[in-house]
Image (cartoon, rainbow, N blue to C red):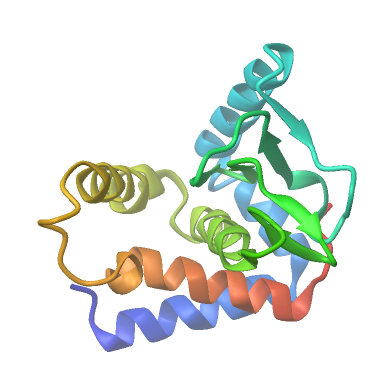
Length: 173
């Protein structure tokens, strides 16, 4: 469990990075280069196998968001690349359908890319692996899952960092 001082420091860093977009890219392409490269390589293979495409309907979050061709109820980010499970933009909101608006998933995944800028090469061990295990466990054993998905520090902080980003920028290049 992270202490309150550690979380306050993270939130201050996240706000600072969101305020200075150039720092987001500088950190992701230097300190966080490992996952950023894996993200671009993954995207390359998903694009050439026609598994994902870039949303052309709306550039609310811009060029870092790619959608799957098939409907999925998940999303993930690797470095600066975000892959969303066939979300659509309807009336300037990311949705699974016209009834279900889910902008928060996109913001949350962008928050993970901000975490990559902050945690760099340690991101894999302190966020990615625990997050994948948590998602798998909660999907496989939903009756045993306690609390909400975003109750753990690395998921909650990703959501808050994504909200900071949305508050500052309405497009991502």
